[in-house]
Length: 555
Image (cartoon, rainbow, N blue to C red; front, side, top):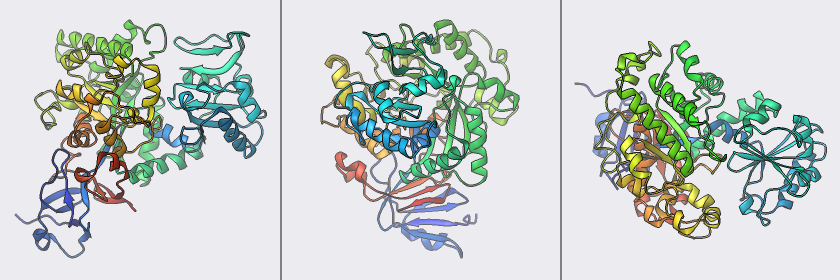
């Protein structure tokens, strides 16, 4: 059989698999976006044709493209346009006031000023700013200062007035409008009120800014070696899917996206003839995202509603991704999964509603197993990886919950980068005996629980190399160890950012490996991570990024 035409050949490269230091091969041949051959440099002559582009990697390291399994693309893009109040930019409340004052001076009176990323623990005062402090910064502008978690914000007086919020405004279930203990006046601090504030008139990012910033953010991710993301935002998912389709058609999005949806979107997608994994290799519909509000006295949605949502999504062929950062949310999510699995076991597959005539619809209900993730990463389980329910974050996993996660066959998408970025806050607020249960990795892996890593950007900066370093080091910015026994090897951490999230999304035969038949999603590093000290991993440069054989970044 004749060798397929190679339109791209990468040679003189050090090829690394996610689970091994080196394959000993240094040439990759690509045809129409897919890898067709991996071998030694001596194969170049036989593979090269007139018009073949040959790239000399000059001994640099090639890895499969990184996959960020939990990221908020549109929110990360919006943060680019906001006043930077992150710990890297400000260290006190007066510094926040000064930053907002400068932004207000550039903004016409009456228009909103948006600021993003403050963390009260990182401020000298170790408290939230108050509305009267923001009033001094921008008395003629409504101001919204968003917390680094995305779950809270501070509004100034002009913003509260604009939104019609006063001392007697009732909070939505699970939300908090903070009041001064002495006077009863609103401090401006709002917790778990994003949807409420939008319904009252907090403007979303203008369409022109969305058009500019989302493709820009996608390109920035490519510079970090990210070739695919699992977008974990369910709000306005259908509108965002439409935008992404248009941008892909125009060649404006250089990376792949797996887009999570809201429970209410399932019926609308079915009306379009779409189900789980509908789309193409660039853009696909992902799991149903279920947000668990863990700040109220009880987890919301309440048990009955949560069970119904989970069962409906599962019955329509969708796995669920549960936002569960704390112990209470994790318990609620696992209970809902157990209920849905028990209910499904009691009825025949034919009793579930058909959601689509799309070719993926039957695969969603009766899928074939994905490739093994390897020993300790779910490889012994023949269940189809991409139909597993997911726990997003799993921030605090007590010992009694770990076997239940394993028993239910649930995957975990976690953020070891939080140990580095937010660990000093955790150390101040969480008792020492519970800190070892924060963002666990090694224990989950040893229990055979499939794992993948995400950044949760913009909650923390994106960057797979920094996340991988954090998973190995388990140290805060100040150098304090957090659960060092949960550290994993470099090979395991690399798998969690490449082959593992690929398998979890149903892309196990397409992404995450450098092998014939796989997409040519590749990253060229300035050094070999297996000989680089963990402390220096984040300083390795991303020299080139390819997606489907197209170079989307070169330094």
